[in-house]
Image 1 (cartoon, rainbow, N blue to C red):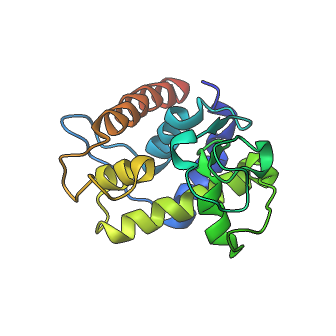
Image 2 (cartoon, rainbow, N blue to C red):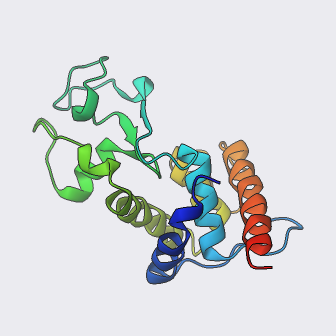
Length: 176
Protein backbone atom coordinates (compact mmCIF):
# COMPACT_ATOMS: atom_id res chain seq x y z
CA UNK A 1 0.00 0.00 0.00
CA UNK A 2 1.14 3.48 -0.84
CA UNK A 3 0.57 4.55 2.78
CA UNK A 4 2.82 1.89 4.32
CA UNK A 5 5.86 4.22 4.76
CA UNK A 6 3.60 6.72 6.55
CA UNK A 7 2.25 4.26 9.12
CA UNK A 8 4.47 5.38 12.02
CA UNK A 9 3.39 9.00 11.43
CA UNK A 10 -0.26 8.04 10.93
CA UNK A 11 -0.26 6.03 14.16
CA UNK A 12 1.53 8.76 16.11
CA UNK A 13 -0.83 11.48 14.91
CA UNK A 14 -3.91 9.30 15.56
CA UNK A 15 -2.66 8.71 19.12
CA UNK A 16 -1.71 12.36 19.63
CA UNK A 17 -5.23 13.62 18.85
CA UNK A 18 -6.86 10.72 20.70
CA UNK A 19 -8.76 9.06 17.87
CA UNK A 20 -10.96 6.23 19.15
CA UNK A 21 -11.14 2.68 17.86
CA UNK A 22 -13.97 2.06 15.39
CA UNK A 23 -16.27 -0.94 15.45
CA UNK A 24 -18.19 -1.00 12.16
CA UNK A 25 -20.88 -3.61 11.58
CA UNK A 26 -19.51 -7.12 12.15
CA UNK A 27 -15.84 -6.35 11.47
CA UNK A 28 -13.17 -6.55 14.14
CA UNK A 29 -12.74 -3.08 15.63
CA UNK A 30 -10.29 -0.94 13.72
CA UNK A 31 -7.44 0.67 15.64
CA UNK A 32 -7.23 4.48 15.30
CA UNK A 33 -4.25 4.35 12.95
CA UNK A 34 -5.94 1.71 10.79
CA UNK A 35 -9.05 3.74 10.06
CA UNK A 36 -7.08 6.98 9.72
CA UNK A 37 -4.88 5.27 7.12
CA UNK A 38 -8.08 4.02 5.46
CA UNK A 39 -9.47 7.56 5.31
CA UNK A 40 -6.25 8.66 3.60
CA UNK A 41 -6.55 5.81 1.09
CA UNK A 42 -10.18 6.69 0.42
CA UNK A 43 -9.42 10.39 -0.03
CA UNK A 44 -6.17 10.36 -2.03
CA UNK A 45 -5.03 6.74 -2.49
CA UNK A 46 -2.06 7.83 -0.36
CA UNK A 47 -0.88 10.45 -2.89
CA UNK A 48 0.27 13.55 -1.00
CA UNK A 49 0.17 15.57 -4.25
CA UNK A 50 -3.46 14.71 -5.04
CA UNK A 51 -5.71 17.69 -5.84
CA UNK A 52 -9.30 17.90 -7.00
CA UNK A 53 -11.24 20.92 -8.13
CA UNK A 54 -14.68 20.93 -6.53
CA UNK A 55 -16.51 23.00 -9.13
CA UNK A 56 -19.89 22.43 -7.45
CA UNK A 57 -18.59 24.43 -4.47
CA UNK A 58 -17.19 27.32 -6.54
CA UNK A 59 -20.35 29.41 -6.64
CA UNK A 60 -19.61 32.51 -4.63
CA UNK A 61 -16.97 35.22 -4.92
CA UNK A 62 -14.37 34.39 -2.31
CA UNK A 63 -11.04 35.73 -3.53
CA UNK A 64 -10.56 33.43 -6.48
CA UNK A 65 -12.09 33.38 -9.96
CA UNK A 66 -15.72 32.23 -9.88
CA UNK A 67 -16.34 28.90 -11.69
CA UNK A 68 -12.68 28.56 -12.61
CA UNK A 69 -9.92 26.40 -11.13
CA UNK A 70 -7.28 28.89 -9.94
CA UNK A 71 -4.74 26.13 -9.29
CA UNK A 72 -2.93 26.36 -5.97
CA UNK A 73 -4.86 29.55 -5.15
CA UNK A 74 -8.24 27.79 -5.42
CA UNK A 75 -10.09 27.43 -2.14
CA UNK A 76 -12.75 25.25 -3.76
CA UNK A 77 -10.20 22.51 -4.32
CA UNK A 78 -9.23 19.61 -2.08
CA UNK A 79 -5.55 19.01 -1.41
CA UNK A 80 -3.18 16.29 -0.28
CA UNK A 81 -3.43 13.04 1.65
CA UNK A 82 -6.65 13.89 3.48
CA UNK A 83 -8.05 16.06 0.65
CA UNK A 84 -8.49 19.11 2.86
CA UNK A 85 -10.69 21.71 1.21
CA UNK A 86 -8.98 25.04 0.70
CA UNK A 87 -11.92 26.94 2.22
CA UNK A 88 -11.56 24.87 5.42
CA UNK A 89 -7.84 25.64 5.58
CA UNK A 90 -8.63 29.32 4.98
CA UNK A 91 -10.97 29.36 7.99
CA UNK A 92 -8.53 27.43 10.21
CA UNK A 93 -5.72 29.86 9.27
CA UNK A 94 -7.94 32.88 9.92
CA UNK A 95 -7.50 34.26 6.40
CA UNK A 96 -10.63 36.19 5.38
CA UNK A 97 -12.45 35.60 2.11
CA UNK A 98 -11.29 37.92 -0.61
CA UNK A 99 -7.62 37.62 0.40
CA UNK A 100 -5.63 35.55 -2.09
CA UNK A 101 -4.14 32.47 -0.44
CA UNK A 102 -1.66 29.89 -1.75
CA UNK A 103 -2.55 26.36 -0.62
CA UNK A 104 0.75 24.67 -1.53
CA UNK A 105 1.38 23.96 2.16
CA UNK A 106 -1.52 21.46 2.10
CA UNK A 107 0.58 19.24 -0.18
CA UNK A 108 3.02 18.63 2.67
CA UNK A 109 1.93 15.39 4.41
CA UNK A 110 2.33 16.53 8.02
CA UNK A 111 0.61 19.87 7.46
CA UNK A 112 -2.19 18.22 5.53
CA UNK A 113 -2.74 15.61 8.22
CA UNK A 114 -2.74 18.26 10.93
CA UNK A 115 -5.46 20.24 9.14
CA UNK A 116 -7.43 17.10 8.25
CA UNK A 117 -7.25 15.83 11.82
CA UNK A 118 -8.46 19.19 13.16
CA UNK A 119 -11.55 18.90 10.97
CA UNK A 120 -12.03 15.22 11.85
CA UNK A 121 -11.63 15.72 15.62
CA UNK A 122 -14.10 18.62 15.50
CA UNK A 123 -16.55 16.23 13.82
CA UNK A 124 -15.89 13.60 16.49
CA UNK A 125 -16.52 16.15 19.24
CA UNK A 126 -19.76 17.31 17.59
CA UNK A 127 -21.03 13.73 17.18
CA UNK A 128 -20.12 12.47 20.64
CA UNK A 129 -17.30 10.33 19.25
CA UNK A 130 -19.38 8.55 16.58
CA UNK A 131 -16.72 7.58 14.03
CA UNK A 132 -19.08 6.61 11.20
CA UNK A 133 -21.00 9.89 11.45
CA UNK A 134 -17.75 11.86 11.71
CA UNK A 135 -16.46 10.19 8.55
CA UNK A 136 -19.72 10.92 6.72
CA UNK A 137 -19.45 14.55 7.76
CA UNK A 138 -15.74 14.72 6.87
CA UNK A 139 -16.72 13.80 3.35
CA UNK A 140 -19.98 15.67 2.91
CA UNK A 141 -20.68 18.01 5.81
CA UNK A 142 -23.35 17.76 8.47
CA UNK A 143 -26.38 18.20 6.21
CA UNK A 144 -27.89 14.80 5.47
CA UNK A 145 -25.47 13.02 7.81
CA UNK A 146 -27.23 12.86 11.20
CA UNK A 147 -25.67 11.13 14.19
CA UNK A 148 -26.33 7.40 13.83
CA UNK A 149 -27.38 7.68 10.16
CA UNK A 150 -28.74 7.09 7.68
CA UNK A 151 -26.00 8.95 5.85
CA UNK A 152 -26.22 10.82 2.57
CA UNK A 153 -22.58 9.80 2.12
CA UNK A 154 -23.01 6.14 3.20
CA UNK A 155 -20.93 4.88 0.27
CA UNK A 156 -18.00 6.97 1.53
CA UNK A 157 -18.24 5.46 5.04
CA UNK A 158 -18.45 1.96 3.52
CA UNK A 159 -15.41 2.76 1.36
CA UNK A 160 -13.36 3.82 4.38
CA UNK A 161 -14.45 0.65 6.21
CA UNK A 162 -13.37 -1.48 3.23
CA UNK A 163 -9.97 0.19 3.16
CA UNK A 164 -9.70 -0.22 6.95
CA UNK A 165 -10.29 -3.97 6.65
CA UNK A 166 -7.52 -4.23 4.02
CA UNK A 167 -5.18 -2.07 6.13
CA UNK A 168 -5.89 -4.22 9.19
CA UNK A 169 -5.01 -7.39 7.23
CA UNK A 170 -1.87 -5.85 5.73
CA UNK A 171 -0.66 -4.63 9.11
CA UNK A 172 -1.31 -8.04 10.69
CA UNK A 173 0.60 -9.79 7.87
CA UNK A 174 3.51 -7.37 8.25
CA UNK A 175 3.72 -8.21 11.96
CA UNK A 176 3.94 -12.00 11.45
